[in-house]
Image 1 (cartoon, helix red, strand yellow):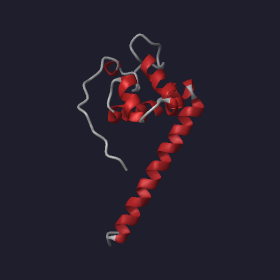
Image 2: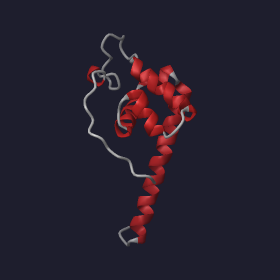
Image 3: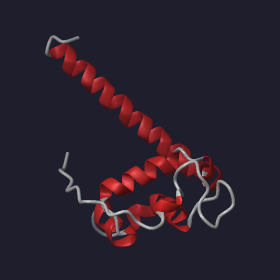
Length: 118
């Protein structure tokens, strides 16, 4: 697995509006997605079309570190508004996230058993 450089994240003006939390976005109706949230979902639909690494495209398009992007994306995947906006994409990304979580848990369990802790 490649190492990821974690940059200091400066608060961005859109995150202060609560767009990816349970609170509605400023200026939007209750539960609607912000422009940035819609752009992130659109990017996830077709990120493979961008030349180079996904992390570089994230930095260029959204001006945030990969770590911050995945934090925002994970919160967005738990949002009912995102599910309503693009149900197939959100369900696919949720399945992928669950699959990775299960794989990590299984690896931890097998590591614990191999070291005699389980």
